[in-house]
Structures are given as structure tokens and as C-alpha cells.
Length: 115
Image (cartoon, rainbow, N blue to C red):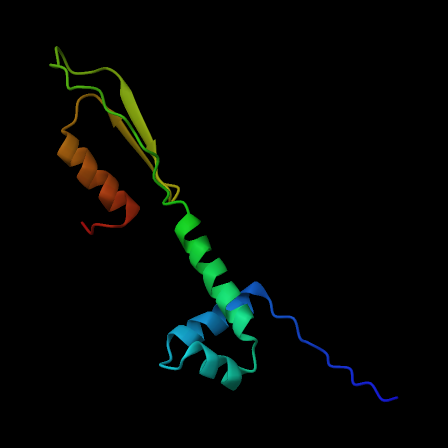
């Protein structure tokens, strides 16, 4: 009795990510793409779903902050604020500062606004 042994190559997550990206850049149907790439249709759907979920679940890097109602400044504040940004930079503010100015400084430090 003759038996055939077929070896299935295992793809890494990075290889599947590349395949899913390649599929999304084509105009082929999922079935046609899978036939052309010799990959199981179910695996393509599985990895496409898994990679989408990973993107959705990725943390934004921001932490919600609750601000208290503004109070009338009596004198320049002697306190300090330190904000650690997602890119590792730190913004330190000593004394009173305009909220819009602070927002602009943080945006520039994050790299989302050019100075």
C-alpha cells in the first residue's frame, strides 16, 4: 500500500501578516488569491481577523485624565507638572501656564506638530 506524505510548511505570524497585506492590495477574491498563493481559504480568513483584532486592541498610548473645574489663580502656582510622553520625552511645567500653550508644547514634543 502506497501512502503519500505531504509536508505543510508552517508560516510565522509575520509571514501571514505579509500574505494578508498582499491579499488586501489585490483585486482578487479571497478564493482566487488563496488558489494563486496556495494557502487554505480558512487560514486567510483566520489571520485576517486575528490581525485586525490586534490593530484594534493596540493601546493608543494616551491615558485618560480628568481635569477639575478651573479655579481662579491667586498667585503663580509654586507646583510643577511632569508629563511623560509615549515617545519617552518628558515635559515639565513649573508655575502657571496657559492650557493652549501646554497643549501646543505637548503636541510638538510628541512630534504631531512641527515648530
